[in-house]
Image (cartoon, rainbow, N blue to C red; front, side, top):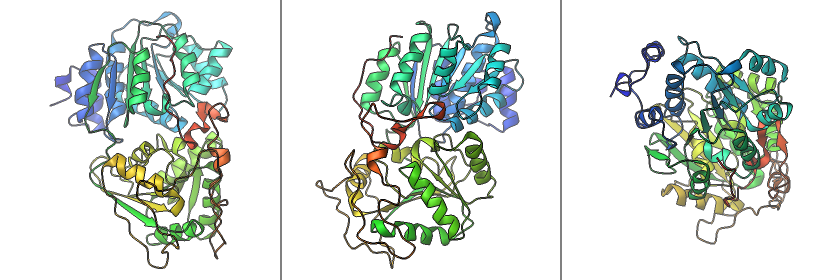
Length: 450
């Protein structure tokens, strides 16, 4: 199958050829015709399989011949959970539409609103936004969403998470009832899918891989370790090849900062990216990582959405995610576009239950291997009664510090702060909420009427 056979405009085909696109990926081949036909769509595919092009290409095609609205009000709205993902989508849209007279702009927090307001006043066809900053513009009446024809939720599972749902409901209320709605994600839990059905019209579904699968070329490794020695083991793994680009996941923002301080003091080049960082700091950290000026990027789950590194060789879970589905998104940062990748998880005894949930979700027995010199004093429990950190409670303190190590509390496991019940999540800049660092409770709530 070729892109020509999908019915895309010649100007788009020309841009794709210049970008080196030879043939559509499965999610593109399945989604593009349905979007062009005007259907609502739920599309699930592994991270790194070309989901952005699957909605951006037909979106641009539909805008080519459509008459501009009065004052160039936005005709398409793309919502994302993070600033980095918004910027990445804008880059792709501009690359695909380089031969078109279609304008696009990003709206997210961490930067001044002035340039965004000026762009909206000049007129823009496609707005790519994070929910929090978009609501800021709605409140100041600097954006008019009444002409939006197509709504896209990228990383839709996170966009429909309870931490984002109140903001999303407000945005849905400002959109026309008659519109096309497209949801793209690597995972769709049944509860999330049921919630989506409340504001979609007879959506079609495209699933190119079984739910909650990861790329076949990713190898998975679990290293048991005492919580007090996690940092030492992390340094040991990273030091095996200090030039290798590695993305490390921390459960909390505080934990990410502590890890970066430790790694830099140990001679590695590291930086953190999370919701408390300024946009300039986040942009610089990501650019330095892509250019190999730093080799270790420590990120929280929500900040990592949108990190797209070609041939990233390794992802390390310093902390396991509280929600098993997030493991799929984390590991999706490596093993992209046919390249091999490695996923390493450092797991302490109190995370045994979380590991069991991940293995159950993937229907795969991930190998558990001790690292010589770091064998845990208490082995992991992978049976049905395995313990797991409780929501709203701190994990147990490590009994002592080891030289170069740290206590469980110091490693960023302040669960009482990171995993507050719904209603106490701290809002982060640009619509990024503390929901990204706490366990999600998927209890469907009524969404705003579409």
